[in-house]
Image (tube, rainbow, N blue to C red):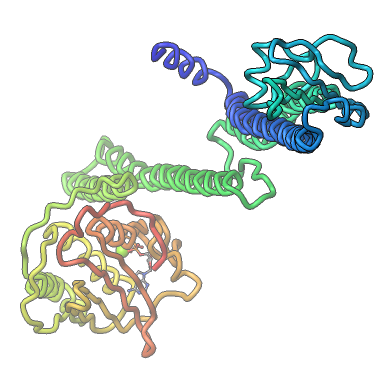
Length: 471
Ligand SMILES: Nc1ncnc2c1ncn2[C@@H]1O[C@H](COP(=O)(O)OP(=O)(O)OP(=O)(O)O)[C@@H](O)[C@H]1O
Ligand SMILES: [Mg+2]
């Protein structure tokens, strides 16, 4: 039995969802309708039989009371009255012979002797009649038998039985066909989505699955899948843009490098010219190395794999050290880089990445900004914040939302060696720590760029997926 059930489950598991839904519906409907039909039939039958029982008992009671009044003179019993409308009455003696009979019954006894015994207790069905017997008092064991024809009752039951047990299954089959058709209709949007999904090759940007025009689980599934397709398309587009920008950025220093080396190789080069060409070539190689490592940071962040080696450190002190380092260079240009003498700020951060992020922000303030550069580190709501302020012209307003995207520069023509990766690396580092970065223009002029970093990694947090969101 168990093996049979297991086999049935395996068989069902291999069928289509549509068939399984229909079969489940058919099973439930068959059990429900079957038990309803059975209950209806049984209660109708017992209602009919109850009515017949009551009328038999009433007839028996009426006739026996006449019989008692009549005493032994049975001929005075009004059996003739019982003869109409399918009723029957007979008086049998103790050996089962007919003593008296209602008209039209003939001389055959309605009940055999063994049937009389049963009919004395409850109505008995015999010869197409329901019959009830009662012993007459002081009449040497004579028995009064009263009966009614069962034809109408049986006909009513046959009609009801045909209706329920032949018509019912036909209705059930029709309902199953309707359920099969409905299931097909309900699942059609899934098939449409599947077909479109099979056509998507990955190259197209704006392909979406057809979402059914309803507000049920299927339309929500379609919308969710479309949102996912949108995110995948964005990620692919970002990746392509990154590759094309990267190759573009690599071409220029490589071309310059080749030129320098060709110059150095020239036949009539003096020693000084050769040294100058080679040191220029070394500068290009440095630039290429920087670009390669910046690209590596961006690419790892894109994959959510920028490594973060957390160490307990005093952020305020690290920021002061960076400020001092930049201040020495800034002084030669008549500018300054200062850090407020903040209190100790202990946090678990990657010291190298932190330095890289702050370096990029300060380098920007020196390169793109003007005036004094101020650094500030503090803690707010459990987050470490590092702010860099300068007194330059600030960001162009329309560029601000794109400042953290890789390879974006406000004025590419005038950016010289700048590649536009600095701020995207700042954001990637912040996000790898579970934090964020932002930029704004100060009301007094100049730029304000900051990073926010959680003091310690959040429990079970998924850190490091960089999206280059605008701050
Ligand atoms: N402090 C600032 N003031 C004004 N503009 C800024 C400032 N910092 C950044 N920018 C603008 O944002 C752009 C992007 O900065 P980002 O650091 O990403 O790239 P970059 O400095 O141009 O190049 P890289 O840092 O890769 O050498 C800059 O080109 C500049 O136009
Ligand atoms: Mg920069």
